[in-house]
Image (cartoon, rainbow, N blue to C red; front, side, top):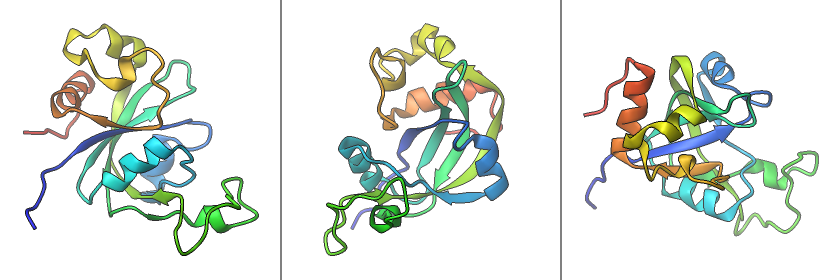
Length: 161
């Protein structure tokens, strides 16, 4: 099987629930609780080594906060089977799990977050999903050129060829 190249993603998290600082402290975490089929399907496409823009949603202002890396392929989200979890899904079954997650690891926190407004105003980011009206999906693909531009805007240490 041919090795595929790195893919790029954006994953949203409310900083009050889980922030880039939390990821930096923990270094690696499962990205659980996704209960949207399209977002789940995107996670199922992810592979170890893929890169992620860590995005703070429901923040004032919302924006790109840093970079993470996918550590593994998607696997069943255990919270779907935990009756005590707010992510419990009584319709999911262990033989054919409905929900998946991936593990993400910290790469870099931006010196300053890049607000959504700034992303929307940059012509080089035209077509980037997060800049489009009504973009509410918490996991979404990002084109390489858009990923590189966000890194440039953030003056990130990480570079993408």
